[in-house]
Length: 208
Image 1 (cartoon, rainbow, N blue to C red):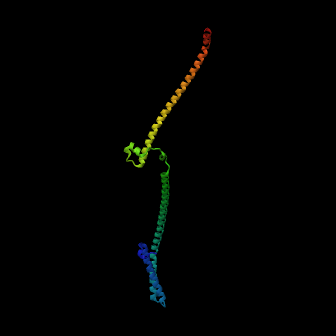
Image 2 (cartoon, rainbow, N blue to C red):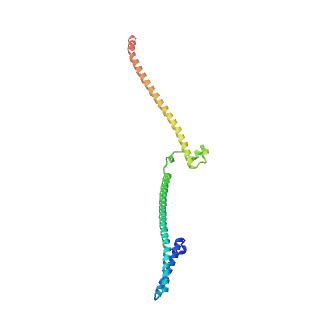
Image 3 (cartoon, rainbow, N blue to C red):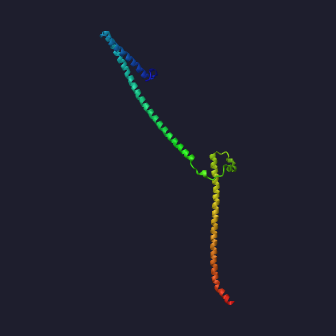
């Protein structure tokens, strides 16, 4: 329990002062009653005065005690409110720690993820920078993006060339098929012509 020198509340200090006076009057009255053999008029008067003083001190202490009880009640309410706030902050702290750990896990997963770009057959950095020296000051991330974009453009150009060659191949195949059909039709026409010319050949054979 803290000493009185540490008490700063005026109501509590006043309550202590009246308590001390009350104890002094009570101890004095008790001492008078114990040391006196008979109840003399002077003793009776002194005892009556001290009883009145005790009653006065009690009357002064009642409102102080009531104020102290009200202060204690308010302090308990404020303490409970502060405890709830602390509990809320503690819960928020736990949630933030959980979120932090979750984000760390996600970041680690992203950093260790086997990205497809890591397996792209990109030209070496030295060769790329030789072609694009203006990119020499880029940081590694920006440089990787630039290399991927360059590779994408080259692959798009190659794909366009492939599509062009594929169309040309399909056109040549279609032309060859058409020529085959023409030759087949020509063969049929020749066969029909030869079949139609057979009687003429027989006539020539008879004549000569």
